[in-house]
Image (cartoon, rainbow, N blue to C red; front, side, top):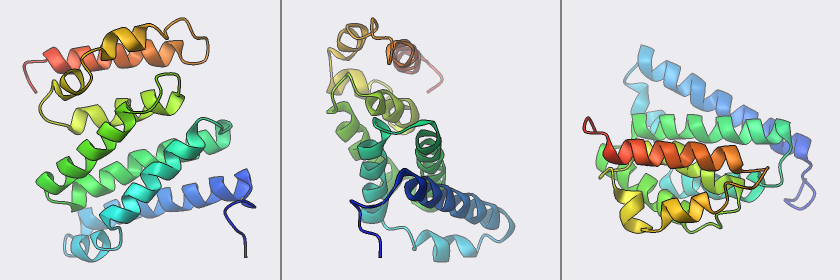
Length: 169
């Protein structure tokens, strides 16, 4: 058996890709057979989803291109799965707790910007991030000089401000 310490990037990539395919196929099955939603939705508990969320954060910063792409797809597809299977109040509570955790990450981590990019649009009220972290924009902009995260900083500042001031949301 392979322990967590021995798992190579190849195995991590393969497992993330496998779970992504499962989420995708499950969503496709929901569309064709709505009765399957409860059965498949019960297979991913909030605790398991939160474990995967932390797994993505833990391996995001040190990942190469292949694992980074696999983690990205896994997380995006898991969010789609959760928002399709959970009651909106439950999904909002879970995603809000993940956003709070993400906002407590260091501003120098790539995972910080990735998580906020994909979670902010599911959270109500629109100004949640700016209320939770009043200095969010200033703290992000202080890292825009970084070659490794500069474009992610610019993107997230734009997305958060646009979402915050968008009258349609």
